[in-house]
Length: 249
Length: 245
Image (cartoon, rainbow over all chains, first blue to last red; front, side, top):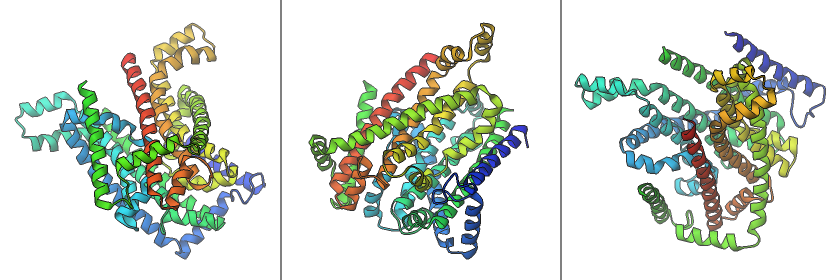
């Protein structure tokens, strides 16, 4: 690990330790925030008892569906829009301001359209993730070096082979960034939708525990999500860096 | 001129899509564009609507101020100190992609019901993108500028005001744009759960009372305002980037 990596580890564990000390010393009241070690213990017991397995499975399933839908739709949409410059120019301001619209407010409408259950949640997740993928697909296609396309033409490659052998590998790092963002946004969208109104899933469980003053369960689940998302993002972040570095060489 | 007609065509397409959806699912689920617009105008004309707007506006203003000034300060510090920036970046990126809604109960327990919880929630949504954009903007300042600053013996405040801020301005506007969207989202989510006032509360209340017309009207007003402000910032953003390059 690099020097900065070690330092980062020290900073993060220092922060957790500080929190632990503050909670144990009573500076932060137990009703506001239990000590991190207590939270971890609660989480372990919750996971071991299997009481939350169904909710966790459901949320992860919803996120997975939303991620797949976002990546596919975003990629196809990006390629299609890139092929039509005029449409693209018209859509550009809408894509740039897309995330200014608070989508959660459409959730009740989606429930009426798609019915209760997983579908509206997956749709919200997809709405969140798809545009990140689309924008990055457009970016990737924009940044393909001209010389590569010219070389492909010189070699007399047909469009399909150009797409598979030149365009796709060249745009791959951007596609990866898009996929990474889509995963993060789908998590945010799905968990928020579950939190607002739903009858199952991790987001719902947290809201339910909160409404019933079940702090132990609430903080355990919160810790679970934070650890899960952080680990996932850290892995994707490192992987992305490696891809970008290989590209620079 | 071409561009304006194209933009108009997109809007027409969106409204048509809305109308078609309305025909498919019916008024109970989705009111028609004309009906929603009528209700929105009615709301905008009523005296009970504006206090909610003011409430949301104040919460948004406070959160934005905190997010922008806090984000600028932290971002500049992390941008100048390379090691600190490298240590902090992955931490910031994971904080950015965390579903912050899960932290809502903690914010509520720490700040209590009311304005402060909303502001805190809006700020934690908006501050991280501002930090990340500022940090990257400061990092990409040409080293020659910083070296000349050292030659001229600028004091740290002078360095920030004469070199760092002007050089990083275009990126700062980009950060502000992303920060604005997220801050608004944070404030609205805050209002949706634990508030008796504000536009988020109005939406939640309308949902609870199955008042689809009001819900859609508030959403329409919110979305239009958000998109217009964001488009304004985008315009400034693009102009600055063009001037900088």
